[in-house]
Amino acid sequence: MSVKTCVEAVQARIRAAALAAGRDPAEITLVAATKVQTSDTIREAIQAGITCCGENRVQEFNTHWKDGAYEGAEVHFIGHLQKNKVKYLVGKVSLIESIDSEGLMTAVSDRAVKTGVVQDILIEVNIGGEASKSGAAPAEVEALLRLAADLPGVRARGLMAIPPVAEQPGENQRYFREMYQLFVDMRGKMADNGECMDILSMGMSGDFEDAIAQGATQVRVGTALFGQRPPMRANG
Ligand SMILES: *Cc1c(COP(=O)(O)O)cnc(C)c1O
Image (cartoon, rainbow, N blue to C red; front, side, top):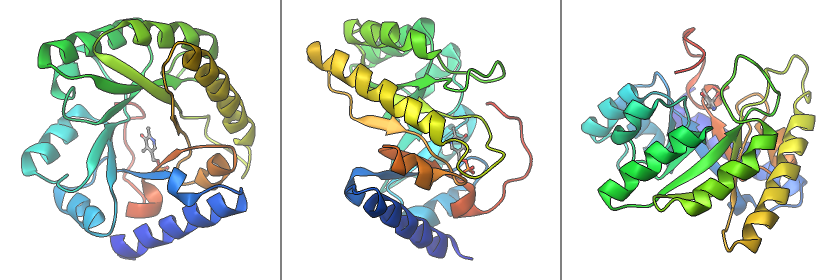
């Protein structure tokens, strides 16, 4: 199947899932997870209607950026991020979704101040409590959001999660539900501070409909758009 056919099919599924949940499909952003794809494939996806690309690796981002492959779309960074690579992203990507520590957040803020921008970020939450995964513990999220409100170079727009790999269909519903509750709770607390949180990023190829049913505003989809990827390192 062509990328265009896949993009249209995923968009139709998002629309159907939103309507089934009594939600406006326009509330949900499809982020194309473009790891291991070529610049040409990214251009093809944007041509087919993709408005937002999600990158996992700074090196791949740099290559596609130099190629001008993202023209017509914005880019989110969705992978594990090291402090020394923050400088390649700040001011270029519209959202860094994977902030999970005070140190990383402070590095992003410092760089943003130096560059003269305010960088939008999400807090990545390790909702399944998996030792192998990055992400802040749910109990750490409030302190991170309060730090974001104090730092001049970042604006926290919401939360992101990658739940455990599901063995049965529907298994992640409970994690999506927990994430939504955390999101609503934190959004309320931050609103008291005058901060506006409007993004909940969760759901991938295998479960984005469940995530939409539970309140996701953004789904990150790779395989359903581009086909199976070759095996790779889990994080990076
Ligand atoms: C690869 C990736 C996705 C998309 O995964 P698929 O199962 O291929 O849809 C979503 N989020 C992150 C952070 C990813 O690394």
